Amino acid sequence: MINLAIGIDIGGTNIRVAQVDSDGRVLKKIKRETSEDIVKNLTDAIDELITENTAGIGIGVAGVVDSKTGVVSRSPNLPQVEGIDFAGILKEKYGIPVRIENDANAAAVGEKFAGAGRRFDDFVMLTLGTGIGGGVVIDGSLLPVAAELGHITVEAKGRKCLCPNSGCLESYASGRAIVSEVIEELERGAESLLKGCCDGNIYKITPEDVYNYALEGDTLARETLKNAGKYLGIGIASLVNIFSPQAVIIGGGLVGAWNILVNEAIKEANKRAFPELMKNVEVLPAGLTDNAGVVGAASLVLYSDITR
Ligand code: BMX
Ligand code: ZN
Image 1 (tube, rainbow, N blue to C red):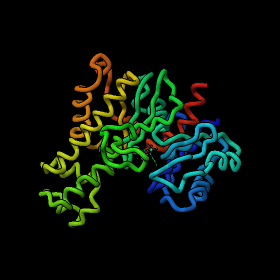
Image 2: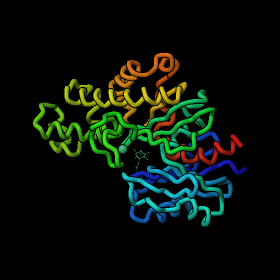
Image 3: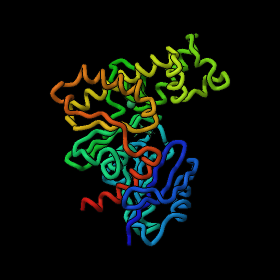
């Protein structure tokens, strides 16, 4: 039975390649550090996982994927993938269908296929990780648009982003933004327990550290997360006004800080969005957690079969 797919998640630090079954379960998984020769990384891993039951390969990659050619046309946070035609190369080598999407678009398909999105026809997906990614599902299908929702403007004269814009949501509410804000404050001499974090090396602070110190009552950590949450809420309010979704599904590592970050975001979005639209919206965490990237990517193959 041809009921498996290979899901590939290409990130800045790691590449994950998995064999996924038609229920969205991960059967085997390989994780490699992202090296200069990404294509070789991928084909080595695929060679280990591919079987005669593999229906196809799905790839999720951070950056803008040209919907016509499948080439990654821009990836400010992951420049080594720019210009590579992953789908073309893998199709040629393995002779099976290959689909490629932006990582957060793939995550949205994964949520619809096997996660918190199953019970909704219309939802907005946000992934809060190093950056902020987005995907939009309307009438049960992924909107075939870039959906770079991390780059909607939340502050007109705001911080410079890696994209051409300033004041992007990603520059205020992503893991990277939270950590750099904390570091800046500490460099300015702010009083905080975080000074003692990571053996005194503040440049090693992670978003998770910020959350843990916030739970211990550290004011800087708590205020930084709440501020990020406020900006997230500003972004969510716009997304609700635009898409009138049934749900906003939030995935990525920062979901762990839900009770501070996302609760603040919900409060802010409630103040700003059209009440008639906001009252219908459930804001909830993604259903796929650890394997969200690879299952999302595999679902580009598995879910498209289901809908066909
Ligand atoms: C950035 C952008 C998006 C991506 C998002 C989440 C790059 C490389 N990426 O906004 O395309 O979806 O980050 O990416 O420009 P992650 O790395 O946080 O998963
Ligand atoms: Zn931006």
